[in-house]
Every structure is written in C-alpha cells, then in structure tokens.
Image 1 (cartoon, rainbow, N blue to C red):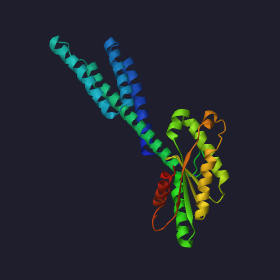
Image 2 (tube, helix red, strand yellow; image 1 turned 60 degrees about the vertical axis):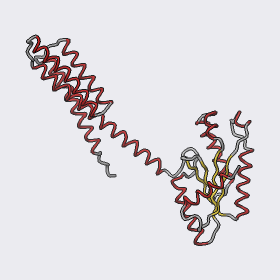
Image 3 (cartoon, rainbow, N blue to C red; image 1 turned 30 degrees about the vertical axis):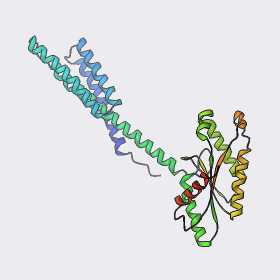
Image 4 (cartoon, rainbow, N blue to C red; image 1 turned 180 degrees about the vertical axis):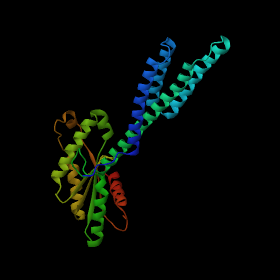
Length: 287
C-alpha cells in the first residue's frame, strides 16, 4: 500500500521543532560556557526568553513580534539610560539578549501557529469525514447525507413510472424543554428508542433516515393517499402511548410528536428540497 506523504505544514512543524531544540541547546551552551556573567540580570532575561516562548506558542506570530519589540525596547532603553547617565558601557551581553529575545519568541510563535494550523486542518478533515459517513451512529438510520440522494431517486422513479411517493417527517415536540429538563444524554436515548420503534413499525423497503442537524426523522415510502394518512395517524398514536425503557418521570408526561406528510407532485416539487418543504409545511398544521 502506498504511504501517504506528510503535508507541507507537517514538514514545516518538524523542521521548526528541530530548530527550537538546537536553539535551546545553543542557548544553554552559550549561557553556561561563554563569558556571560551568571548574574541576576541575566537570569531574569533568560526567564523573559522562556516567557516569550510560551507566550508566542499559545498566541500567534504577530503577538510574538509585539512582545519581542516591547521587551527589546525596554531592555535597550534601560541600558542606553545607564550609558548616558552613569557612563556604563554597553556590553556584548546586551547585544546578545537583544538578538536572543526576539529570535526565540518569534520562532516559538511560528511553531505555535503551525501547530494551530495543523489542529484546524485535522478538525476540518474530521468534520468532512463525519459528513461523509452515511449512517447515524446513535440511531443506526441513514443520515441526511443519503436522505437527499435517495429522495431524488424516488422522485425520479415517481416521474418515470407514475408511482405515488410519500415523504413523512417526525419531529419531537418541546424537545428544547426535554433537553433542558432531562439532559442531552437522555434525549439521545429517547432518539435511539424512537429509531427502534420506527424500524420495527415500518416495512423493510421503506427508507428511514435521521437528520441530526434538525433532529427530525424522515421516511420515504410508496403508498396511496389512504395508506399514507393511515401510517401518519398510527405513528402519532404509537408515540403518544409509548412507554420508554427506564423513562421514569418521562413516562408520566404526555409525549408528543409532530408528523408531516407530503405526496410527491412533479408540478410543485422540482427538487428534494421542495419536497421536504412540503412535508415541513404539513407538519406545521399538525396540532
């Protein structure tokens, strides 16, 4: 199997990480074995370098640059003042820190920026992969990714062969209040149980979907007007009388669903979205 080559951002991050390690090593060597005095001033400056690296890594490149400019300006101004006011010469250590502070801070900021870029890229890929998955992991039903594709297929079959196609939507009433009262985890259990009821009640050839974005069930099936309305009424009755497993207080309240039913009409529905809107409109009248 062909191995996937690492991306440019990944290679850049590896390179910058190596550079940071080398810079750490060089700083330790220079600080330990060169002529730099082991004074409290240099210790403080070393801490400023470390602080700048941490600050740069967790912010961005621009913030790193601003931090460096401020730190170098204050340190340089302090030494220039000592040179003018007290005739203290500007030593090589001053030039050393003027170079080291911005260098380490900016490199660390760039490394942090690359890391965030990779994290955002991975999050984007994860979202895209989730969208490509055709089965909802909680309910086991097909998700909205397949809903519109299969709905279009049924619409084409209806136009070609004159078969009556129905779309039924099922939505839980007062779901916001249910989530607020019982929690999202309990609500997901309710959705899972209702999915099992739908699977058990409907025929195998009926297409069942769960649209996670709107928390609605979608069912596409072939029938006649009498059969479609009968299915709608039976679903309303089943859900109103349903006793949830481990439902507790949930079984003591009247559980309600809104059901919308629409028959496909080529004259009024030119796309799956139009067909969906018809079913949603019918749901509004289900009071």
